[in-house]
Image 1 (cartoon, rainbow over the protein chains, first blue to last red):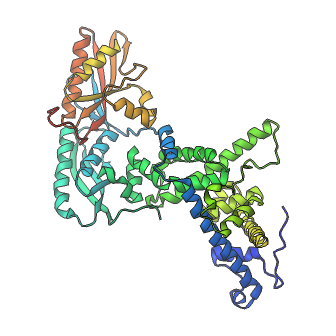
Image 2 (cartoon, helix red, strand yellow):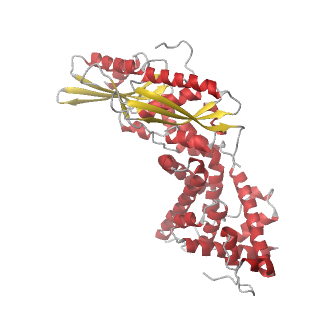
Length: 193
Length: 188
Length: 114
């Protein structure tokens, strides 16, 4: 690989200037102010960087939207392994039987209850405690994003009740607490950049 | 609100996807897919290969979603996965073509990563000369440059992707820039 | 044998779906999953309910989806009882796993009550 002739008369190189632009490291910073060659070099590198940004923007625009067919095809071909999580036992009437539900099903249930609250979107849901042992106390931790302007404090109490009702209906877990954390406030529709 | 996943912050989507919510994962894929595809196409040279690389990156992302320490940093993570899968794809292709006795010296992405009539209309002269200059770069330098400027990866991250030392990344990147600056100035 | 058993299970109040019993379902593409979940769609392989004989005892493994309007513990016990009754007088052990609670999907109003 041949080295380009990139050493200036002042002895510095475009390589050093390139590193300086990325890291701010340079052996003799005042030199950069006084040396016309180095300043020209930095200007060139900045123009390159600007052209790179333009190229990037044009490439992303040319790639199309995430709702286009190419992405639909990719998503249709994806093999996403489901995440059953732990096995949560349910009482059986016959000792020969083994009845259970998956942690993944219970988490999805909690998520959908939260999603049903107007202006709210569930985030991560965790079941803290040994859900595989009947009667063990379990704490539900639910992250929530809310739309700005909604009166969430009122609805947090009713959400807690809805989650408790759903868990009582669909599990035999001993729910010790339901902790709801509002992690995000969404103020407007957003898109990348 | 489940229908509005497209307005939800990254960290929330990551949390849901880690919990197994495929809808949240697909929202992330739609959000960053165009950037991933642009990067993969610049690295591999074609949309067909780019889409394969993006798909592999998404499969890996789904499997490893719960290892992501900083959920808000999901964009950079997806781009790193895309870069790695693109490089893998090129390596596989090269091994295949040299086994087949093909042109070993030809870069696997002779489709000219620069060419692309679809951008010409909006592209300024800077873009056109940069595209032409990129085509003249040695492959390893071009990869470094794309991972840095299009993916925004750090020297360390590029080093991991390319399986070389950070010092080599620094050298290649600097040589790439030097060559690009000269090519672009000649172009004028 | 397995198809009638599947019908027996689907007939239990609160059961919305029967998923392939063994590991197959865990690796299904997301799209195939949604096809499975579409009412009326039948997977080709017919291995929805796993039935095997172990030393004279019949072991039945089944994975189901349960309606949000139902009560999951009651539904799974109902499934176990229905399978046992269907296979009587064989000595049966039933393994039921709930893989999905179809919560809060807009279920047609009044279609089902817990």
